[in-house]
Length: 388
Image: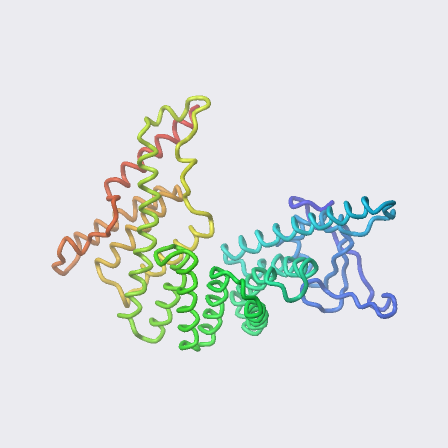
């Protein structure tokens, strides 16, 4: 069996002329005539170019599971046995689908857009087999395929997947506000890539509206649409309007991250030495410190905003640096966190203009001194754990 840690085996060569009459085997990824068959699962076919990409992105992890979906050599002897086989096969399909969706999201978070495509396509095919070609359950896979295509600047492919997703959503009155939000954000990104800025703004505005319904106006789930709207106004040479959206982006991340930091400070009231005691539960384990996707999104948005010289002001840069400092504490990147605190100090003391102290108030309970103390405590805690 081909496991995730094993090297890819050379595929069996496929001669299209040797196929049974009326049977045309095509590449799993690009639909070109198949030239290679996976030697392990014997269910997946490729053109001469695509086997390695599929192996690296998802197939190495699911090859044996796909093989198990092949019809058994022996027939079921009873209805009960047939039902059990059918149930087991569906459970396997569901497992492969979840693995594929997870891998696709991971690749997208890492900006590996090419590697995100194969698992997204696999998920779409399995979901189609399970639910049919026009079911709402297909939408997450279609959106992942669109994001992968946008990342590769394949706008026609992105439009194809988004059109199918949009049509599916319109046919279903039970579509959640969350899914509407994801759809419009991707439609906005497509319009922005085509420099259709008016259409992009309409989609991002709808994204913000739907995510606000689903999560609230101050949720980090809503911040993506605000960030994208700011980008559009910047491209339209409207820096003042753009800055108003970016200020809101910083504010939402700041409030969220500050809440997590305050929980961490309270959890660490216990002396660090007690964390090394056998059977002692680490109070930090019960704190929701954001998933990988949220951390990546926060860092990308805040670093992008901080780099925009055309809308920069001392107080704006100060707030962005302070928010990034909180984020890096949560990500356990302590040197980077302290570096941003140092940068805050430099901004505050080095401004060439006279700025009132209140301009540097970020609206957080946490202070720069709190961060320095928290980092020292977390480092001490880790030392006790390592010496245990």
